[in-house]
Length: 82
Image 1 (tube, helix red, strand yellow):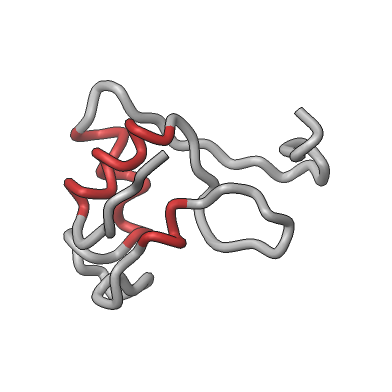
Image 2: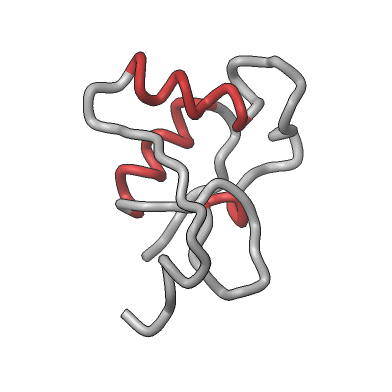
């Protein structure tokens, strides 16, 4: 899958649709995350609606009718085995 750099909210939504699923941040377990494709201007917890991924979680579900947000807490719930 060829992913483009994510520069702002709309490019994040396009990339998420292409990927189908992504966890919220980076990880050491090798689980796919769109955060790998964030450009340098993407910074969390700034409150900027265009470049803050923390803001995107709510924007995605309120502005897009084909995206959803969820939290997964149980360890090993997402695994490379599948």
